[in-house]
Length: 233
Image (cartoon, rainbow, N blue to C red; front, side, top):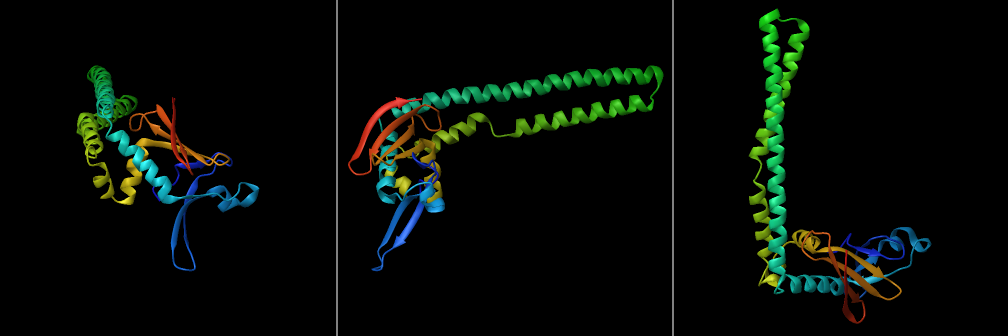
């Protein structure tokens, strides 16, 4: 069930979960079922089912439409390039800060060594010197680990390539992925799906650009199709 922990009931606030039912004739039905009713009964909510394929096909179709849209790719590139710049600056700032702290420790260590040359070493000076040297080694390890990490530029490029690999042949490539991979990809685009039980509609909140905060809501009728509504933040 690709949409588990994305679909939530507007009445009880519980997530819908996957449910499989086999009829006496052997036919298999797959639904998303209200978890509030399933686990806590009528004191919390009432029974409500949504055919799995109805909900899945709508969500996947919406994602495909967005991915294949004429302006989506430009928005994606711009957004990810901005994130790339911020990530690179962040990593550079962290390394620069470590370098400053190392220089400060070197000064303290040199001062302690001067004290040793002038007055000899006692227990207090020895402990302070060892502590400073240990702290410096720790900072050097931290700096080395940070420098050894995959470049943010490479990491973001991989992310871009993964998303863009679905362009042009979304249905074919998406269909070849495992269910877990499909679930992870859907969550790049879908923030949440709220079931308005009284109106029998699902309000699907799609991210304008994958994993960003600005959302575009799509009102999907569980009986009559979908109707777009305004962008929300």
